[in-house]
Amino acid sequence: MYGLVNTIINKSQIAVYCAYSAAPEAGDTSDPWRVSLLTAGVMSTNTDIDYIRPTSTGFNLCWGGSNGGIVRPIWQTSNWVKVRQFVTTDILGTPSEPTLGYLRMWMVGLGPPAKALDEARKYDGGAKEAERGTVAVQAAMDYWDQLIRDNNFTYMKTQRVPYIDGNDSPDDDFNPLGTYDVVVDLRWRYEYVIKGSGVVTWKDKANGMTGSGGWAYDENNAIITFKWASGTKEKWFTRTNTGTCQYAGESERTLTWSKQWFG
Image (tube, rainbow, N blue to C red; front, top):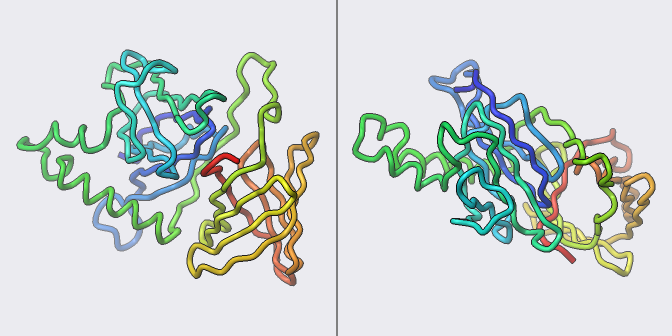
């Protein structure tokens, strides 16, 4: 149902993958599935997102019942979660639990968020089993996971989340140390480890190649800059979870990054 829209506001410290159906293109016989990335501090208001999943098995989405929020969870999962159409869903976080994303819905008239397969079981044995039942949803989840492994992401229009109360600075609690998932031009995927000694290491997730360099954090301008022996110029913008890199002799490329584990 690509013509409908919901809103997902990620106020947590984790990133999530988003699965949604898009308008058919030439050769498509049905609405094709797409997967995009929603990083921490970013919101989507233009895409009807059907399912979300944390970008790391070390992260969990959780739900506490009623309208949700930062309360004791009824369930939590690192797998796909069904979210609702026409509804605004917040993903909330706390400094003491940076690997959790607490779901909060502004209204629950169409039902609460649910683990994808729990939601699918409701349709088993019914008229919509073929398109919404367990077998269909598991096949869709397998397809989304394959898109992720293939780095086959689709651009999704997003915007930065306004900070609550007007007093919070996005830089107050930012700690650069940790392990990051980095995607360049929605194609090439790397793992970075930023260490306290001013050293950063990288690993190409496709071929296993590794390397190291230096980093520096400019808190006033909310930018991390990297220094690589290859001459590549790279910087990250910590308020938007985006960045740019320019390989020697090539044009500038865009990238997104999300923290997978905290240093």
